[in-house]
Length: 331
Image (tube, rainbow, N blue to C red; front, side, top):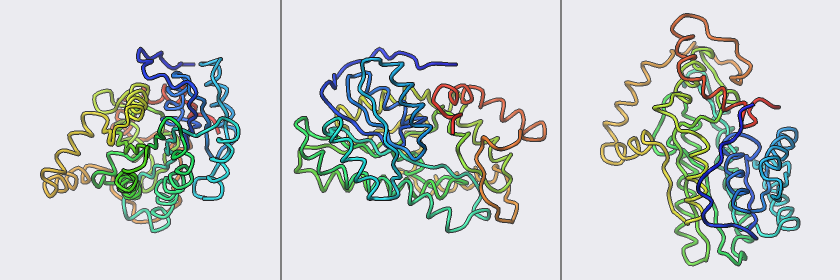
């Protein structure tokens, strides 16, 4: 099985710090936890799936035998569950001094294949989950002798509307505004808030993303772009930059050249950017005109047709390897 690469940047020692990472059982959250543990930070992983958490904890302890790593089952949609998570983290590891709200879901489908419930699910997990995490973490972060650090993981999708990812983009946009608002509200406190806007990353998330409409074609384009070397970013490098930015108390982190370009274009010429997105939407698979339950990418059959198969193979090979490395094939 492919393993994490060592990072040359071990600056900003975090010994005696405690961190809590939601959505920490796989993908980007797991990699962020790995980078925190590499700096000597005691790490508490949180996610809904206990089996995935157990695998993630064991993986990090193999990587960092002297690290302090714990896992807590938590549903960020439930504020009481998040409150218990922060209390458990404080009782077992101290702090927390660093909290990363990373829990999320990805729904890929045209608008006519989804309804209000998909928007509610996205908002409940990503926005409400980030809100619960922030509110329950603040009392502990305010008490941190190091000055607390809070990071909310948004997305380039939170900076502009992305076709066939509309529930995801809406929830991430709300998370982005929450991060900026918290930063201004908490300016007088001795803590920092970082809004993180990653672009596409090779985390293996295509296997857990949920697809609707013409599912196999939607899976083909999404997995291809998410794994394309010139478009997506190495997830280990992304996690290192996120942790470095949080440690340095940066207010905003935008990752990948494509994400930075999209953010700049939308800021300078929003109408033109929206029109370009509309043109891009016409290249995506057409809706089926019916609503059926969304299905995870890992449960879908291989795409049919030469173009769809080649598209899937072109971009997803590296992403498939990332899925093996970052605990995406469990659960």
